[in-house]
Image (cartoon, rainbow, N blue to C red):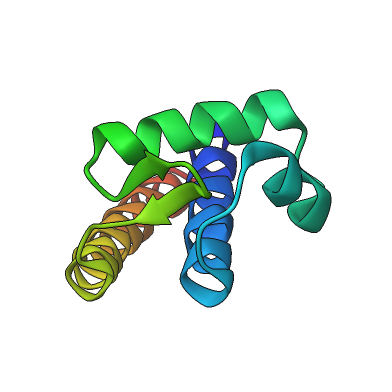
Length: 94
């Protein structure tokens, strides 16, 4: 579950930067109500993944979001299928 929360947080921040443009940690924290230390961590992860970069104006998107979102949707679909298979295994053990 924690991984899903983390993914959701990263996506919220990416969507905000996509919509509003470059901004710093404190502004992102104010808008999203995510604590600054968690925003900082998400920005570090997104920077490592090549999705954002630090600029004097704040974090800025540099990655191909369309490709990123497409790949993420595919991974979510694959995960959903696997979860359904696991659920069936549980149901068959009754």
